[in-house]
Image (cartoon, rainbow, N blue to C red):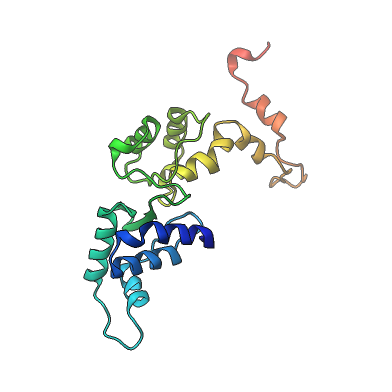
Length: 206
């Protein structure tokens, strides 16, 4: 949710740049921003929000025109994921991250990610210390990660980077003893036992 001081700043900065309908549309966007800093409601929902009570509904075409005008005036940025049929509306100058509009605005790391996964949304900068080539390779080798359509760059970089690239993923697997299916009730392999089993053959003493 946008804090009051940020709301006032956004509205005051754009008051003289927008006509009445555009300004109302901007207000509706602000009201529907999620915790990630973008609005994802449909034009049909905008119609409900922007139509005065008791009056004839505005058209979705009007909403589309007002959004286009706000984008042309660089008040908002609209990111379309055609693969998922999803639209995200960001406010320019808002403290949350505003994604690049096209490949020319991407950082070299973002560009590598985009080239590897063109249908994934770029919703953050690549964090410092993240080896993007290594991360991309790990994603490609994991069926689960590759097929997770709802995941974005932020999801991969933040949620999975520590677990997969830094080695904490294996630690997490063995954070709690697990029971196997044998009647002895012996716990599953410990991390140390698992690591021993996975020792490269050239390192085994004979």
